[in-house]
Amino acid sequence: MDFQNVQDWKQNQLSKTEYGRMPWHDVALALRGHSVLDIAQHFVETWNHAKRDKYKRDGRYDWLQLEWVEDDILGVQHPRFPVGDYIKHPLHPLSTQKMDKLGNVTTQLVRSSADWSHGILTEHSIQNAYQEVIRNAKHYVYIENHINKTTQLLDTNYTTVTATGDKQKPIINTIGAAIVDAITTAHSENRKFRVIVLIPLVPGFAGDLREKGANGTRAIMDYQYKSMFRGEHSICGILKKKGIDPVQYISFFSLRSYDRLNRTERIMEKEERTGVKYEDVQHAQAHEVMSEEGVTGGQGYGKNDSVQYHMKKDREAFEEELEGDTPHDERTKDSIAQDALESRKKPLEEGFQGDEELEKENIITEQCYIHAKVLIADDKIAIIGSSNLNDRSQLGYHDSELSIVVEDQNTIDTKMDGEDFQASYFAAHLRRQLWREHLGLLPPQDLDCSNDPNVALPGEGEYDFQEDEQSKIVEDPLDDKLWDTWNRQAYDNTAIFRELFHCVPDNSVKTFEDYDKFLPKEGIKAGHLFNPEMPLKDVKEKLDGIKGHLVRFPTEFLINEEMAERGLDFNEITESIYT
Image (cartoon, rainbow, N blue to C red):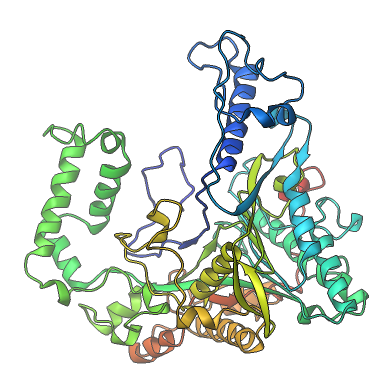
């Protein structure tokens, strides 16, 4: 629904009063120091490559030049250019100076670039970094990565797909082989070692996976499953052939969330009284922010004959009517999604302006889409960036990607498998924050961002990671008690979501016949309660049992079916698109 007529990006065919919007999990990074110059250099090179190939004689676009650079590393970066002749005219000397040391974090920019994207020989330093970090890991490897499949065959497709060797063609990247090597080494040394992988439940937005239009998505899922845990050449299959139980070393998880739509009896009354639909109010708000008039400061809203003017007036009339007669603390919350976190309330305590049947109609679920591309190893080192674990991101000559390897020299005293351990401040705290989020051990973040470290400038500040009781719970990534909690919450959350919503993919769905039996009966909207007859109190009590967003990844979904059907959109010619 979201990806129809994408050129009209302000239009939204998915009604927020009937369906949930997919929540999103991502990780971003702010930088200061020398790495910023590397990023700038990468951008300048990319821009000039496009200028040379497509706009060489187009005066609208200038050539770019990175003028600020440290003179003592010029000979290393560009050995063909003598210092002083770095730019094209000697009368315009290079702006050089020494940069003060800004911290104790060692970083390296890595990228996937090639002749077509950057005008250079193929570089796959991202893949090199992933392989090196994984193979050198001694205690654990934690991965968050995402999968994305658009509805058009030739659009960019992403998937978490990796190979263990040349038996998994058309998949070429061998990060899977690095995972096998790391686990094999740990097993031979009788050393506790874990690989924890978080990926989305479904790689895209194709809707019903049984439909013909979802064949591309199923193809991606098929490659994904066969690269990780299904078949003799998968990561788990190779480990089994070596006599290693993969369950002891590698696990797969996902994220899922619930919420309640804010469509109350009172809102429906206001719709009837004002003649303005709640959806139109949402469209007006989006238009004010995202349309050309919104971007340019509201030009057009003062003209009483413009569409923008009437949209704004309708929105104001509806909101004035809505605000008029109900005290703030009696209103229904816009969202109860925060109740899965360390919240003061649970769903059973949340009020609602309407009868029980209407409230049940508003209770929904969606996967929390993992869009992050993060690897953390041993609480020592992290890789963050744009690169997926697939051929398109890793081989260098497909998609252009940029990531950064971060190794903090500031250490903290912590625990690893119960023993004293020196961890890097950044990697350890990043993992702890992520695990606390997934386990529901973080408090909800206010929408005003008043206490959000992401809005602070880089450097020390009041919003830095804080050590507290909840942080201690996730301190030791190899602690058996923590691991039991992690798995138990994933199992319990999965079971509750299955009982309430019957959402796919699910391990109980092994064939398409199972799929048909598992889905809600006709007339029940996607993501809504499977059994509308269940008492509201029972529904809320079960939602109270969901902690965080962690769920098990359904490794047995459609295991008895051929998921990728050969046809026009998926065949020997097009299959490399899906890797």
